[in-house]
Image 1 (cartoon, rainbow, N blue to C red):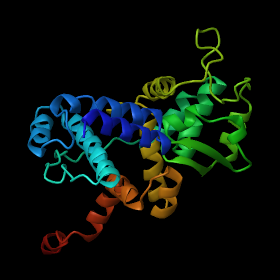
Image 2 (cartoon, helix red, strand yellow):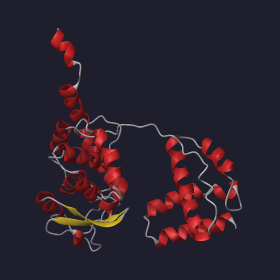
Image 3 (tube, rainbow, N blue to C red):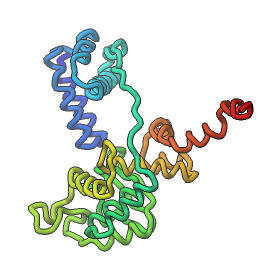
Length: 283
């Protein structure tokens, strides 16, 4: 069986399953080397192992690994081929604590947006209030805004997300174009009346985070999304509801990503329960 034929069938299946354009683009990019590595399918695991070892960057290595594994699982189900990825070692990614905003930084962000345009303020409020993804915000239309919820379309299909009254009113006051999208390029620019893309949303969030004096490693909407999760849990919200709001396919994903970020709570618990108190008592 030719490698190119299997890849073409896999990509067609992904399109039929409604995967996002960004996911399809990533799959196509990562699958490009495979026909050169092995014209026939399935490839030998040793060839894949050597290729992955020479890909620069652990995150890039892991992206290739996950794509190859998705192709492998598809071919195993569709063509009954042997799983070639079972004996391939997955690249090890070191754990990192991803940046989030503190309560003080969130207040500074709100203050920095005091003189912002209605569009920019609505963008910030939407991300802070709902924690939706950039792609979901790009796809948001006025028809998706209900009384207390919005319908978002993105990575995992569509889902219903609660929205606060203040955010809803900010969205509804924005000018309505014929295309129905909520966010457009700024007036008097070449992007005027064009739906705002993820890069445009990133620039807006970055601009006001910098004005607020934020000095973290990341400046995009993902910082606000993670911060939402941390504030939710610190305020007593449960993991299941948070998982549904964020659109995670599994509550395990929510637990793995967000509970390690509760550093302040862990510090308080440590001070409360550490056995070092025995030394204080002796002193």
